[in-house]
Image (cartoon, rainbow, N blue to C red; front, side, top):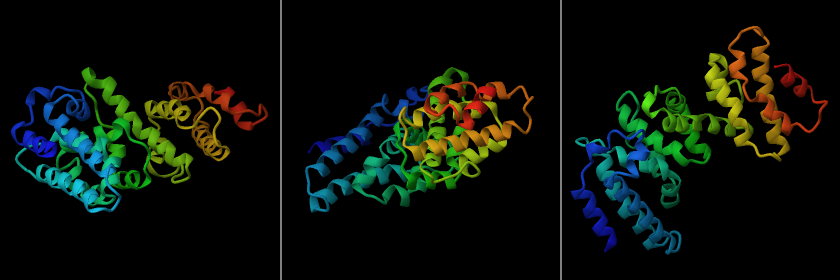
Length: 274
């Protein structure tokens, strides 16, 4: 079968050191032949599952065949499966469709801690941040382990900075979604650390990302959460208004005015003063 052919391809197609120079794990995975094979195995398993009745024997078989292959290589200590972990990170929601708990129960082999294996951990995070939507259970799992904040603050080589920085910035977008949905507040979690540490680059990313998180016609409740966050940032600024770093921190804040329909809103005057 096609599945057997792909499984055999994984056996004979080893990780290729020529792809080590790629800027992040996911870019490597979608260019390295071994990574493309792992991706094809996921896509084939999804097709098999979606043509089967949910909870049918064939649905479980599609997942079990994939699980056996992935666990074999994830548990292999002799090879650093960089591309596999990036693919798992990028496709984790699809894997949850096949089996809701597997990735959560196996997070320690899918994403070893950065202290234990920084390359494999970063590869998973690269894949996770490439195209992930906000899923609270996964967000909370990675957040409580400190993985999201550590990934955001990873040093990036200048030659690879643009693409990797884009992936790292996804952490801020996810944290903003958590704020807007009311799952966190600005005094805790990732945003709490960013606010208290007062890094102007991180503050500027928060300001510039708000517009991508809430739409031009936002839900009133979401807008209120975003306004509260901006007010919190301005409150901190007001404790030392003459500090020159605030100029960079609040760059682009004026764009938020387009979402405030009431010119009498007190936040309008505060933004204009910045």
